[in-house]
Image 1 (cartoon, rainbow, N blue to C red):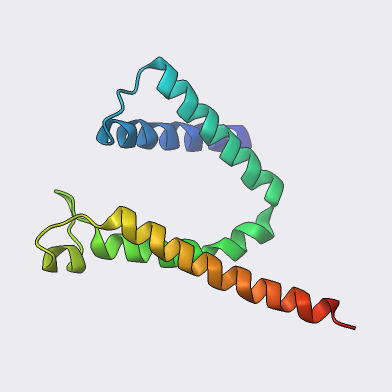
Image 2 (image 1 turned 180 degrees about the vertical axis):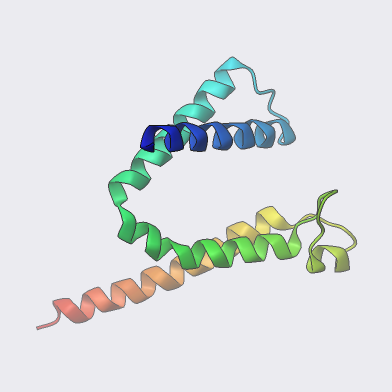
Length: 121
């Protein structure tokens, strides 16, 4: 069952990444597809090594970033409220990057502060 889930996840992620590459103007030929599949395999391995606790800790930043992206997303299927107010401009990429960076900085600052408190004599 685990191998089947892994195969389905890789297939879905690969198809989504191929479509994204095509939207970005990359012609997803064999070389690009191999690189995408290798990147997905590397991320999957990294996630499995990091373990469940790390994934649970990442739920909040993922949720915040995805909420920001969907608020400013503009596609033919869905247009978020901010994108609609901006005349249909798709601001999802910059919003996702900025919100993810902000959440990461806040989380790392609190983690560093906690580590310093533990290290203090």
